[in-house]
Length: 387
Image (cartoon, rainbow, N blue to C red; front, side, top):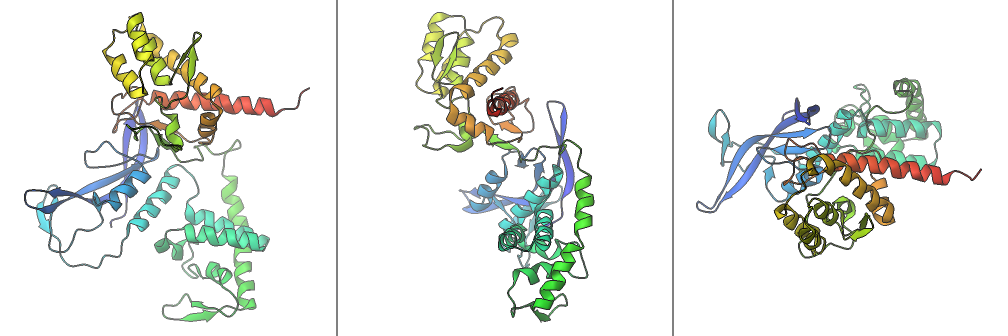
């Protein structure tokens, strides 16, 4: 699998940086009863967007699903024909496949961290071992072990950036006295002993100044980029009813959480938004009475629009979102749980309110971030002792 190269896309005039690497798409030809393969660019961006070919895009969870169901493959079977843009059809020759879906996903997760100026899995493990060396307790040892195992397996040997030792100091600390582990030299082993453990602890203790220099480069008021990965919602729908726990999908405007506007209650933000978009009372009541948010939108798109709606819609949406999350503590908790992550609304029918493909102004996502910051400010204010 080739290493990644830089790419970018624009969202509402802003440049979103990303990376790309090659992957194969697979499509079943029902007439010939064969799979057709095509070499494509797999693109992934700092905001969490992942896309390939001409598709509208997804996120890491969607990429995992595409790898699992065969939509994307790391290498077509030997002897199959692959279309390579600019070259034409070629036949896949014999080769050993060492690359796995988990390796790819692990690499992409790390690269997304680096695109957002966040510590990747290697740096998190490095920090965990330095912390353990300073205070060698069982709890910190298990934290270091978990951080080490979270590094993509093919990257672990390099995580210390030390070509003389590779990851031997870490593996010594994770092993028990008397264990035999692989040494730095190929084909050789070493036996873990108290002396070896002391050497490994000293190794990481000497790393503390370098770690502190790295931390000192952080800005005075915290990271310049959100600490949490972007959260995408709105691309899953349940025509037969919402599940008991839809997770972040409660952020969808169609989720049945009551809102009140001008003294009238609506079943969801979707119901209220589309009902308020018309100045025809009959259409208003018909939209408000719709069974689902999707039905309210469908009816609302047919209704006559208020002449000033284009100017009013943004303010109305913010009012409705504020009310939804202040009125419904359970969904407010989900929103607050997204931390400082960028919120990306997915809705193929509106590039104004969402991110669609490589375009979209994502106003629902932006307004949700405003509502989230207001909820967080409310929580801080409520936690202060009464004067």
